[in-house]
Length: 366
Ligand code: SAH
Image (tube, rainbow, N blue to C red; front, side, top):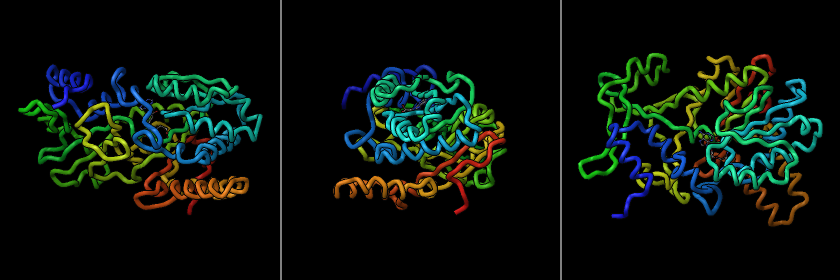
């Protein structure tokens, strides 16, 4: 047997000291431990990394989001300064492409104050490199709450899925938190907290309330939606793109991805990406309860089509070699196609906005 990694030793120590830990705590340690967390120790993106995200598939993705932000700024009556905030910016590719697209309107660019919210110092460095030739004011923060107040447009791709998720399992006496402990051989093992969570499903949709014994339900702390909605309801808008569902449902989506293949989330903590699908219904409900207006979710394919992905691809192909043109076509297909290999249907888009604003672009009825 291999020597356990420092993070595995640390998690064992925490379990020995305070007992089995909720999945959400395990996930937070695996991804964001200040020394050994997955995002803290590496660059996970792209062909050489563990997974590829939409901004890494094509520059068009970030460009369209930059133009979306521009039209939202106009709808806000063109404030003289606007915080353009990205949550979990990865390599900084999407922001770089968005800022390039924003050049079409100098007045908009002059208003921009760019804020990147990132927990990983390693990824912050990559973002600084990606954005090094920008002449705009750029700021980095560990938490959205540290971004100065004022009119804000927030963008987040594959951010919510990386936030810690809890799992609860239905038993005859209610829902029990799923925890990770150590079995007789000293290996990580899943178990259930002995007591049911009081009144857990009281405000949950019927489908969850009526779930059979043994069903698993995943949920995230509402605090993220609250923090975002509080900013948005005062001259703000936010856009979230992620894989997930528009209706709450039972089932387990926690997954671990290592070198583009699925892995066991309990093995090699900190060495693989761990994510879970986003429950957009619950997220939207929490944001609404804090005073934000909610649009979507719609599929990524529909959103990108409404933003003009096909016209933008045509324009790029016009000046391209045959090989480049084929690559552009393949990238657009990947971003908009349904099925298991495409991102178009699996990924959903949701917007939050200040209720005094008109509905934001990208969500027109099909
Ligand atoms: N948006 C990028 C990266 C997605 S991966 C892309 O589409 O390519 C998730 C990103 O969120 C990483 O940059 C990760 O370090 C960051 N992240 C994860 N948890 C976070 C948190 N609690 N606060 C801020 N950033 C976080």
